[in-house]
Amino acid sequence: MTDSGGFQVFSLTDTRKIKEEGVEFRSHLDGSLIFLSPEKSIEVQENLGSDIMMAFDECAPYPADYDYVEHSMQRTLRWLDRCIEAKSDNDDQALFGIIQGGMYRDLRKISAIETTKHDLKGFAVGGLSVGEPIELMNEILDETTNYMPVNKPRYLMGVGTPDYLFEAVERGIDMADCVLPTRNARNGAALTSEGRLNMKNAIFKNDFTPLDHECDCDTCKNYTRAYLRHLMVSGEILGARLLSYHNIHFLLNLMENIRKSIEEDRFLEYKEEFYRKYGYIK
Image 1 (spheres, rainbow, N blue to C red):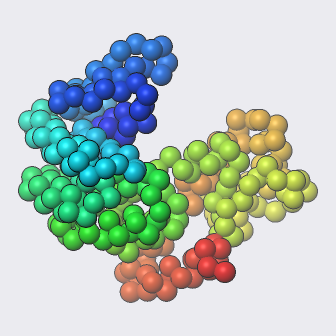
Image 2 (image 1 turned 180 degrees about the vertical axis):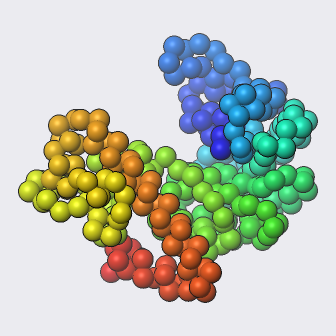
């Protein structure tokens, strides 16, 4: 799966210039001027050989006024038309459209209806988890999924903490992505069945037990908390690698358990059980 560059441009607020033709911005590496259009985005993603590519979109910031978000959403719809036109006939590469509309229920409805008019392989919800409270995200997600087809994948972009994943699945989301497991790992944070642990803490200095007693990943089977702490406080890159491996494994295993709980018709029970154990419910 590859993103179109829309969110990456969103993060470059100081240098970007958004036009109907596309987005102009400066490289964070050497300051050179770069222009990215819907057509160029599709070309790059096709050349990368991604299985799932995303339509080029504008991710509106939070908060943002109604007129700005409406204008942005309509342009994203026009860019979707251009992405569909630019895509080759290669059936091995699926194109997903992205639903935008900020935190405005009526704009989300319009965007969802217009985006899903296209016979695409799946549809994404963008522009959430950009700083708004989780209650607002859930409200907007509830509204948006009402207008998405049930027989095609629903992808929530940029969500990765366990609670956000549970809330998304409860609202009909099938898949999600986030930099969280690796970004947290680089900072020494581990996602475990006991909750989030900071592996730089001195409490783990002489703790020779596995990182997570309930995890069967290679990190947990072969390395102790004490050794992982040693790596992190020493600045050894191996520490970030081992925690990254564990965090990704943890989230993949969580989603597998969520799927199993749905098949067994006990999703809500599993959610409450996980929340209590993880520390979301005291």
